[in-house]
Amino acid sequence: MRNFIQKEKKEKAFGLRMEGKSYGEIRELLGIKSKGTLSYWFKNLKLDDYAKERLRKNTELAQARGLFRFNQERTKRIQIENKISYEAAKKEIKTLKRSELFLLGVALYWGEGAKIREKMNCYRLEISNTDPNLIKLFLRFIREVLNVDEGKIRAGIQIHKNIGESEVRRFWAEKTKLRADSFFITNQASSASRFKRPKNFLPHGTAVVRVNGRQLAYKMKGYIDALSAQDSGK
Image 1: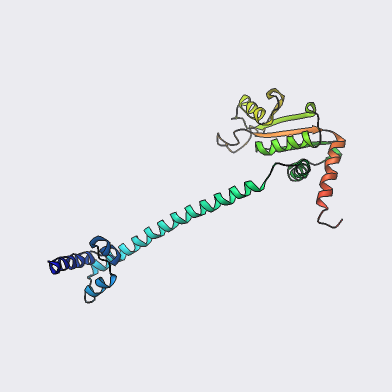
Image 2 (image 1 turned 90 degrees about the vertical axis):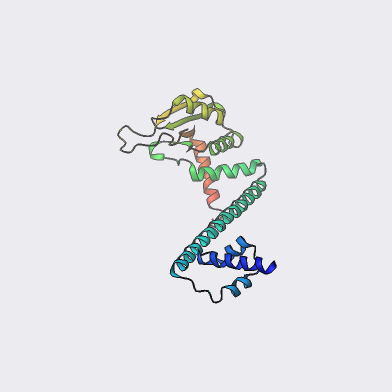
C-alpha cells in the first residue's frame, strides 16, 4: 500500500513538473518534505520546450511574488521604525521654559520674519505662514517674552479668490485666540493670473501677524545678530 501511494505521488510529481511547477510548489502540493526526493525522481527527466517555458514563467512569477512580499515586509518595518523615532523624539521635547521660548522665538523670526526696511521707514515685526502651530508659537513668544500688549497685535489673512473669508477668519481666530473681526483680508492671486489653482490650494490661506514699533524691530535685530554671532567668534 505504501509503495502504491509513493508511486502515485511520484506520477503526480512528474505531471506537475511537466506543467512547469517548481520543486517548492510540488513539495507543497504533494506534502513531500525532502527536496532530495524530487531531485532523485527528476534526475533523468527531460523537459520539453513547453514545460521549460512554463517553468521559466512560474519562476519569474514566484520571484515577483517574493519581491512583493519582501517590499511589503520592508515597508511595514520602515513604518514601525519611523513611528518609534517619531515617538522617541516627541518625548525629548519638554514644556518650554521662558529662556527656551525666547531663543526659539528669535530663531523662528530669523528664518521666517520680515526684515527692517529703513529706506521705506518701515519698522515692525511681521511673520507670515500657513502653519497654525508656527503662528501660535510666534504669538506666544511676543506675548510672553516680548510682553507685547494684545491691542498692538495686528493680524491678517492672505487668501485666493476661491476661499471664503468668513471660514478662514473663524479658523485662524480659533487657532490664535484673536477676534475673528480683527483679521484683515488680502487676495494673494490677481485676476490676471495665468494659472488656475486647485480649489483646495491653501484652504486656510496664509496668516500674517504684525506688531508695529521701531524699538521692537531693532530689539529683534539685536537678538538675531547676537544669535548669529555665537559661532562666528565675534
